[in-house]
Length: 110
Length: 115
Image (cartoon, each protein chain N blue to C red):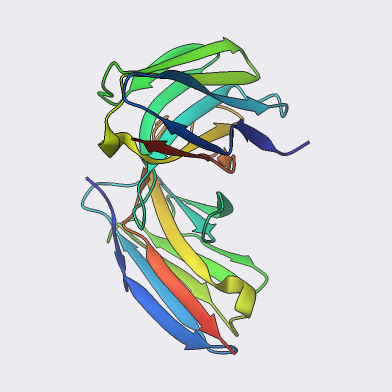
């Protein structure tokens, strides 16, 4: 079953913060985050593993709560280049298959 | 080289045509994937190849036929497609098939239109 992301879409001004959530009805072992700009390939952002870890990547970070089967992506002081559609992808342990979430369209305006 | 390349970039075909999509990577990755993506939707997995062997077929209709001639190449053969098969077809690769730990690298995709 497909993970559900919220919000579906959000518009922010440059410099504002955003949180994107990903919820699964299945037990998770890892969560991937990807960003896809219009007409381009999805680009990998980060992987989070079971254990409730939090990862950071400049102004983009994420958390993973395996008890709640949820992950959140945090974008701070957003830049114009952050615009795109964000997908979470979930997998079970040792799984060859990544199931992508419903997607969140983020638009950053000047 | 951390790139996955796909050809052609665009393809228009009739329902009776036979065509092929090509994907190539030179990162030494042993897992390769085909995804189908409709507009404003997430990528949907079609096939997974692990060490050049088909390991997952997500109940894809037989009019789509994948092939992995070697560890760097992945093809998708198309025959007798339907208009609803029009979509962006993405190829991806990863170091290994354990997606718990391995990121996927995506190609730019082939935009397919079936008339």
